[in-house]
Length: 109
Length: 116
Image 1 (cartoon, rainbow over the protein chains, first blue to last red):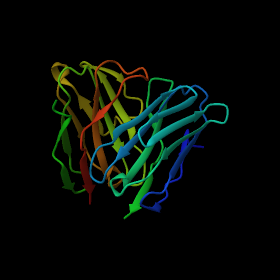
Image 2: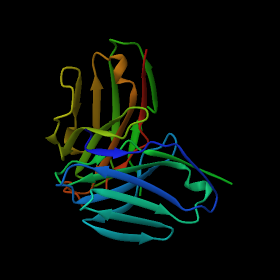
Image 3: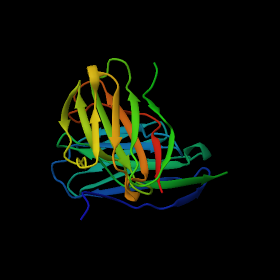
């Protein structure tokens, strides 16, 4: 069993839709939870960071962490074509960043 | 502020050949990471340096991979000899301090390696 599981998609939505991206994990030691965005042929860039459980909002993006269920989510409101990318969840509690396999999102105009 | 620089951007080699990648981290960043990202997968940490010392190389295939960070700045990652399964994107990242979970890692654009 992988430490971090993420549905690879691909996910295709119309512009303006609400997007939900999710990851599950098995390691109870994870305390830091991140979402990275990776455009084609680019390196990942940090999008959202959350420590422990709870919600965090930044513009159109909301990150949720439910440690009791070992489940994290990223919501994108009013999705735009520029949001088309691969979204990677990542987490740590042991000093090493563990990534999910990424979900490819396409937002169609 | 200049980002993490990597070269070359692309490399095609035949199996059993050797190859080297170079990384220049963000100025002042003490910690440097090399990741391997196979197509359709998330990045996997190969090695982490704190200044010029190795912090974690538990997932580095040491029989064929080697890395160094001279003078605590630039770093090179070498593969010798390469295998078909080494085809991947090799990402370099850096962070300001030793990463304990709260530091942001900044990634370079990666080197795309194809082994034929």
